[in-house]
Length: 309
Image 1: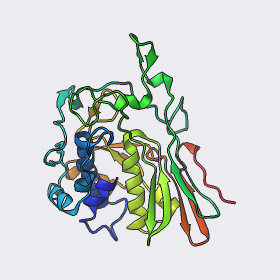
Image 2 (image 1 turned 120 degrees about the vertical axis):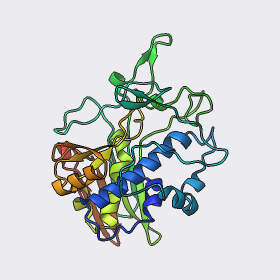
Image 3 (image 1 turned 120 degrees about the horizontal axis):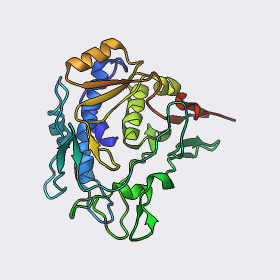
């Protein structure tokens, strides 16, 4: 998310329609670059040095931003930081790209009507004293974590995110933590804790939370409006779970995204797929403004709620 914001900082977003083609295009193209860097650089910092200062720097993102044009990119383009990162190998399979060296069997997701066998959850809480927490508990899905026959036990859900390629920042190793999609998020305003937000959703988490933040900050939507607004996600990059498939150029939008926006995005080269009206996002959010507390929750799936007392 921070890499997306570092890239988006170079564009004038104030006043853009948050369901308009320019807003969607810029967020998606920045996401493609940020997630490409995730594949190349991210891992357990106790085992591998991660060039996070460079990845978030103005100089690095000024150069990366030059890759963004009016047209949708169909390429997978990790950045280059001298002395860091591995070569990300992709191969074509059945019309899409797939990254090799993966393990695992995927993450369950909540159906749009709330049906689920087990899923990530998220909550944001601000108490009377102003203490704030954002958390995304996850895991324990035996049905989605394959058993290793020789060992007699299943992989942890997040162990699916390890790579089996030596020298990769996210390569499997004893005592090493896997990379994760979990992204509980907090923001300060004028140096004070202001906002806590997040979402379940695997690789969609950092896409949905970024969209929410942009709608709140640049489109001036309140928390509930920013959650309720039409949403979308890219499937351009390899997913974090087996079989690490990627669908270059594919953009999945809710049917509530205006047809004019969809047509414009298609003309830019995005491969747009349309889902049901309320199918994207599982967000909750809470903010603190002086003595006031505000909260909002996603109506999709009818599982989230906001409450105050």
